[in-house]
Image 1 (cartoon, rainbow, N blue to C red):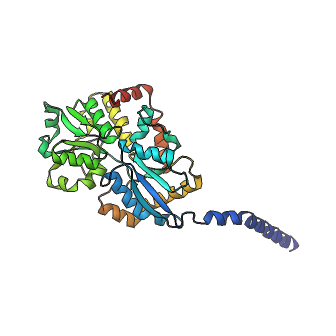
Image 2 (tube, helix red, strand yellow):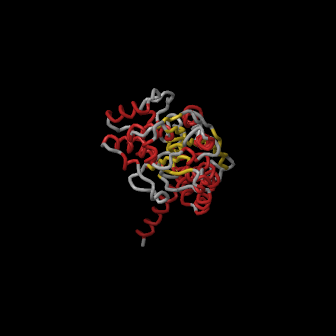
Image 3 (tube, rainbow, N blue to C red):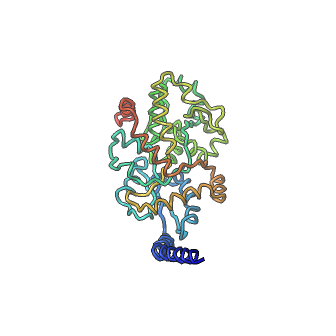
Length: 347
């Protein structure tokens, strides 16, 4: 009995020690840093495009998953294929957990290829996740006269597509042109896919190649009416939405062509819509918002909102994004050199 009593006293003393030692720290960690604050999502594309649409839907739901329930707003910072926003987040934004960057995954490949203007190191961003794995598709207006792949391959003049330098709408078109031998003129310089759509609708372009997950929610009317048709998708198997649309792999005649499509288009498409904190953001805040991001992706109200906006949700965690980004920097030098030649501005 005495032994039990002594043992109980010892346990009580140990418990008091741990409460006294860890109690203030635990209470401090539970204090909601985000209470009364505003998180800003800096979107590197124009209002009305796919990036903007995803970020605005996420902004409506993310705050309630973060301790302290901060407000979340969107600031558009278009330009240079989302590079301006990426550089702002990397170089200017305070690493305090209140600024999230939303920019395109092609910039990671751009760093590897030595693209002009990229001064950041992609591995240093604090990745929060991506809301979906995107897939490139080529959508052209029926007014262009190119209504199927047979007509496209047979075109005696280059088919004019809109692009954004250094990002999927430009890179995908350049790679498909080289890998498949498609007659194509890629006109870069558009600030966002919203402007490419307007260019196609006005007749200055035939269309463009960018994420189906962006085309679907933002070009809905023209797709339903048949004024715009999806002629090609970049995927080894068809998307559920596009069961009868041929794949770029169907027309690739060499192993090199298939590898260029896989690495240059498919890999970066899986991390198209990157969300990240600046380098140096405290680890515990990154962890908090990573968890909140994934909770948002599973939130029934968010999913209903996303469905209403025609947005596909197939998220990857911040940890998964880290691994994919690291993998891009492990590509074979020969393939890197080939991609660099294709995607060079001199093209």
